[in-house]
Length: 344
Image (tube, rainbow, N blue to C red; front, side, top):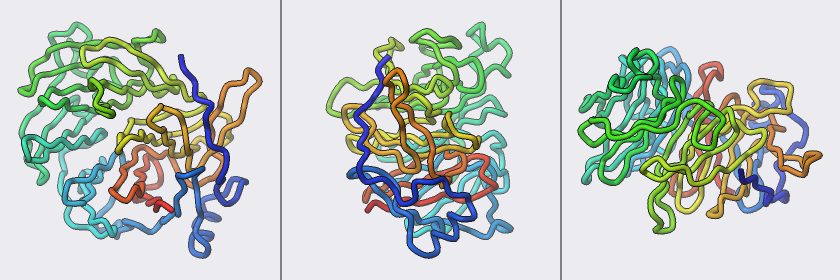
């Protein structure tokens, strides 16, 4: 298992001591907080995307993606409006969706020039392909041909990754911890993974994405959140390597240009449970910035990542725009809207 120690410790954010949420909001109204490290620092904009909760409420804001025209699609499991569509300046453009109580994973895919969404619902035990307007195009149910899914309640999908040919990979992070591979028509092709501590198994296979950087053969990056690691697999399901982030319970990997970004739901080594932050990796899979966090060298010489600024509450996903600003969606955060980190 590979650990990463090449962390840029220069450029620490303002305020080394932890700030309470109330202190943070007060500070944000005056001199903006600057968070991050090295070449990846950001100004915190807590007011981006804040809406009238009586008209457009959110519950858990699980994930966020950006379409080619610049709109940002936010997935929440509030069944008054599962999808909120924002313009880049944080204004609400439209909303839709009332049928996804367990809305969790949101993946955008360009299908021959037409963008489609993939939504996982762990309460309905299903995965849905939809148009950008919410029309359901395909539904994938529990693959009951597999013994582990004879009871569909064991299928609690949390994320999808779509291959260039339209094949679908589903991470069952809240269920049996399997990765199931379907053809574009929704027929089961393969399955691998499962619960365990072995290198090709998972404890909370929470997120998955397709990594096509550097003109290499595409691979799958799969989060093992409770193991505080991301595991790389071939498209056929063969484990290639594991990258460890001690202290950091990472959510799904998000590829932007040659970097990989994670939201970290929570971290160990701190007293508060909502102890998350954002993590950025370079093209060598080395951590180069952790907005909202730092790390210390432990007795065994291994890097340890943990929150040291009370900025985020259970951050669950990130989206990066063309200017490399980061939009952070949060789970269990008091029904709050995303936080924008503006690249400095």
